[in-house]
Length: 341
Image (cartoon, rainbow, N blue to C red; front, top):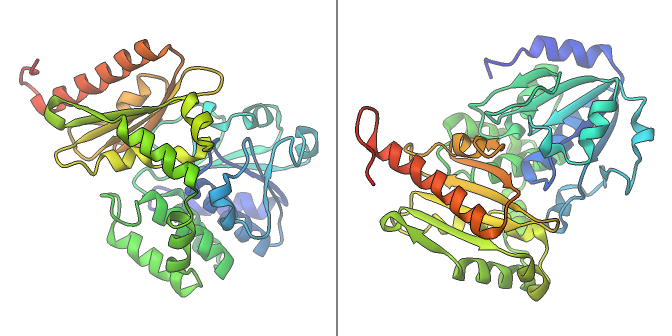
């Protein structure tokens, strides 16, 4: 984490007492685990810490928070109850849109803003940045923060941070996994993380509606470019028909990459208020998902990114697939070569 000024971060922590932690909507294990890990660090230093997110923790991830530290704006605490915070730490996102309802809290707060994140893209959040885009997960950055602040990681913190890192690396199978990733995971296991139990909670607790929704999504999968591009969609009617939750679409797009020869994948998820949340995945250097997502106002990583498109289905499909198709073909053509048609 050579790019992070831990001395400055330590100074901020040392000078303040009341902290508010938040992360992105549709929170995943990296968001939630990073929040819980950071809360544990700050609490160990005698700080007053609140965690408040714009959306509730998905039911399948509630195991990560046995002490119920994760609060939801308005459901548990109002914006008026957060005015006394001195430092507001945003974890695992650098985008206003990703904050959801918490964006207005952040804008209206007089607290010092701090961002800990590993995503490439960023908005002007008027914050102090503690980012490392080469990090495989924000949970890894939080683990480094514990070391920088001289805080011993407890078993509860270790479980949350292990879940954060393991999920954001596809259980250590993504290209972002390095020897440093595995050393950090080993240290978290030494501190009390239990990989077998975490895996069982994450991947062996499916509901029947979740399985049925996945069946619909996978049955809808189509391919282009001789199988190199796979795409699928989930519509509002699918949730009504199966009884599944929006969080049940998490990671489904990765399943389409299991098809032999697939280099890129896209999933369209219809939103309750209209439009589509798009997730992009790539397992080739020829497609930069972050660049494609950015063209639609989103962002993320080179191999995984997301965006929102407020268009009807036919237009959304045409524009998004056209952009991915063009980017993939341009990458295959390479610099100085004609793009194939």
